[in-house]
Amino acid sequence: MILIRRTPLPCFFFDLSKEANKILQDPNSSIQLLKAVRDLLTELTGVLGLKFNEEKETMLDKDVEALIEKREKARKEKQFTLADAIRDELKEKGILLEDTAQGVRWKRERV
Image (cartoon, rainbow, N blue to C red; front, side, top):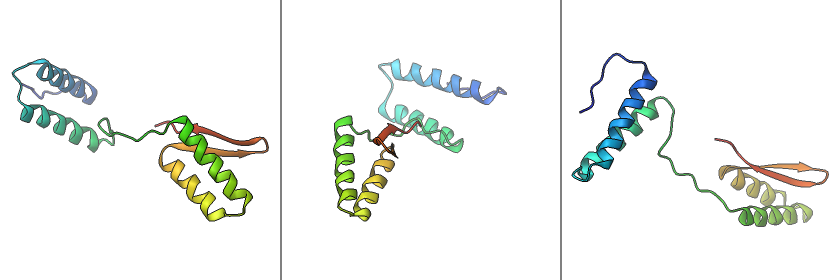
């Protein structure tokens, strides 16, 4: 059973996580209880702007390189709308582009 007492918020989350792990390890725990604990943690951390349960699609390096090549080709052909759309697509997937005199450099956005 989870007891809420007067503790600092980080301690509360630590205690809640510890109890959640005990529930997870118990072979007699029901799926409903596990889902309830997950939903509680998601809701409480969401209030603080923390997102631990969010899956972000990650692109493979070869896919990033292919899109960058497609963008470069569009830029050379003066298809700037397409080039901007590719840049925006990459940015949505956490890839930041930097156009330099030596060519395009890219890196993954830190979350």
